[in-house]
Image 1 (tube, rainbow, N blue to C red):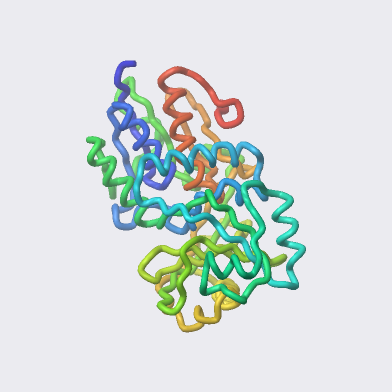
Image 2: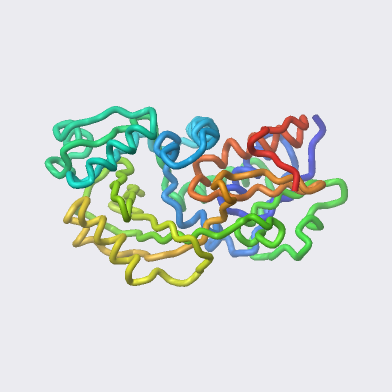
Length: 336
């Protein structure tokens, strides 16, 4: 196939993977982002970056799991910094019904008892009587992953332009005969009438007295939480899911929930340094499944919800196949 001229707008996880997939296929790629590079990423900066297709299937359609499994494989084949030590799902004894429900709703796990919890995560020894272990799942450090994708794009010869907003209409950003891939997230809601914002809040802490090697999910009927190790004694604690488009700072109530629940996982989090309390707004469609919306010579890749890092590689493959061959994924590609 002849080389395409492709402009990608938005340098979050969707935009970066779209650019990476197309650049490594030999197309001429320009990635444009309104924010300076150090501040780029949008809501992708506030994600746990868990590559957990089986865990996410607990509250998502089958297509999320299937494309998530593909996404996990693509992450592993493309980048060496993916940590594949599985996911551990725990619950307090009073919330054992939540653990049983999670087990019924998911695959790819095995039950582990108190002794094996201690073998997997010695710092949690004796703290939980039972858990679910998903051995094939993985995670990445959010900001490191975004930086690694930007560096890979530069090695592939892509043109990266930061700090220069693209004027409306976005489809005019491409040269004559070129294609625009719009990955602006919630900023594209005026062009996608069913897109909504879902607020998520997170904490980043440094806890030298806590040593976890894999994401730990604590189930709770009101406030489930996950803790993701980012390396160097740093942990991301998240995340709220609030149905509103509020870009304000983290509230006191949310901070208490995040940090108090982390303390319930391990009291040593009580001595952690708070490095960051942040909030972002995730874009989502009504069914919380990402879509590729075709509008003439523009593709709109949007609706990441909680699945951005997990599904971004598969969505990039689907979009590239669509541009090269016209083949459409029936559940992902729609006309706008």
